[in-house]
Image (tube, rainbow, N blue to C red):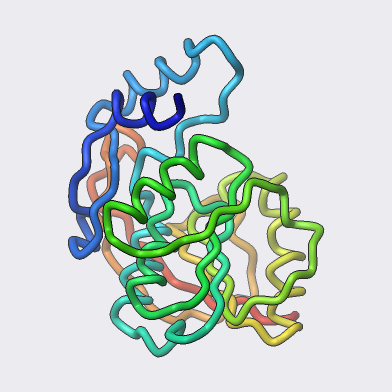
Length: 210
């Protein structure tokens, strides 16, 4: 059922800033948003159907510098489409875990991993109060709301304190915290209907324990 919905509303296409990776992406964002709301059961917004700027920047960064993740365990937190998880797997990370609380997101992540011939494990859970260890924690576009940022940052700082390399991709969202270390800056093509602009200047940041 989840895969049927996904395939009915998306098409497999290369990611604009990461053309080595193809994703099932929505061609009409507004129509998909409406279809999700009218599906008959409450659904989170279809973040899984788009290659958001933060994820594209992180994926580009990892593929351009595979030594960041190669041979290390990776958690892609709030995975959305699974783009960052797929990029990490392509860069040699093992194992790669894609995490989200949305079942459709994880169905998309599995479908996108299969389409790119990589292995990605999925976990449907809220991990933000957990303390599992990963070599690398990656998170794209997670500071878009006060509530999300307030829960996300403590988890990321704890992970960094346990020795994880923690990288986030952010295009200047309203609740981006201070005190992060800039790693790279990219001009990323985005869906103009969602971002009100065709390009977003997007930064990859490293999170430290404090």
